[in-house]
Length: 164
Image (cartoon, rainbow, N blue to C red):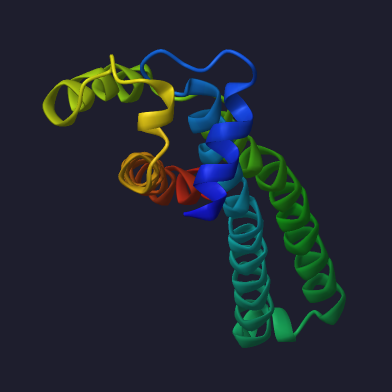
């Protein structure tokens, strides 16, 4: 809650927002989504490691390749080299998905905010009245629901990016 309060009040600057603190929302959402980059890159590494282990296991269990040790080494090297290239491509694409989600916020998210204010409050209150705990709690809740929506989307698109 303290982080929400700090980012919202700092983002306002000398001219407070009229309805929704867009810059504050952007900073909160970006700082939340950027933490997904590490796990996304770790997922790429985990898939790469699994595939590399499968290559070694399948090459070692293929009876026909045991007769030709030179060919076995070449097949293994070619497969591992190919996996390295694919991993590098995935390492570039996967963080870009996270960056895409954190740099562009869905417009519908901001369109929904004034509706919430109409339901629960009056935007004509003074700025000082708006800076209370329930106001910041509502902002935190909005940010959390948006981040959860984006995480759901990334749960589907990151594996696709890795496979691609």
